[in-house]
Amino acid sequence: MRQKSIGEVLKTARESQGLSLDQLQRMTKIQVKYLQALEYNDFEFIPDQAYTRSFLQRYAETLELDAAVLLDAYDHHRLVVYYEAGEEANVDVERSRRKKTKQKKGSVLPLIYLLLAASFILIFVTYVVYSRVQNQARLPKISSSYQVVPQTTSSSAISSKAEESSSVNDEEETSTSTSSSEKKGQLTVSGSGNQLLANLTGNNGATEVTLTVTDVTSWISLAETDLAGGVVLSPENKTVTTSIPEGVSSTAITLGVVKGVDITVNGQKLDISGLTAETATINLTIE
Image: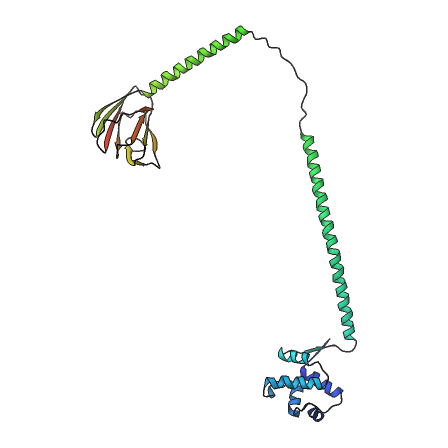
């Protein structure tokens, strides 16, 4: 493969055909100075690019050259590629060889992929079989021997145990009831208007207080507890429960809205029906 400029190609073709510039002028009707400009690659000497292309095409066709190749080289400002005697045949042979090599590679690749896939499947199946064998080997052997133990317990013994169990359960329920009653204590209420006095006697330990609203919103506080700063109860947040620590003898419950509020102390409902004001205070004494 060789490369030459457009001018070199034109001049070499003209001289190989034994033509002078004057003879070529008569054949192409192009002035000698423009023919020389083409051979010297001095395309700017020609007044217009359209004339340059026209002169190149006429020059090439007169000498039986490939005008399209020359015009392409002119448009893209590059050299003309050509092959000398014998080179073109070698190029064809090389292209044919590369094509066959690509075809061979293309035919081998599917076989390689198939072999790889088969290898992966074989490895996977081997692994699954090996895992199952190992799992079966690890399973503990279960003994199939059994022993029958005769039942010798008499009906009278069973009856006695049932009575003892019933007696124990009754005692536990009585004890639990007594303990729960002692812990709750006795709750009494007095007063009316906007202030009540509640008295809890016989209470042991901390006192549990639960405040609930129905369909109203009320601000509520309970001194000496974590609700001392107040909390807002609403239909979305209806209930709050807190404990009055053991040792506290008196505290105060403040209700921002009385109607619709329920109060229980140690599980006993506090009667607040005597409150007639919109807001109220309940003083709770614990003894």
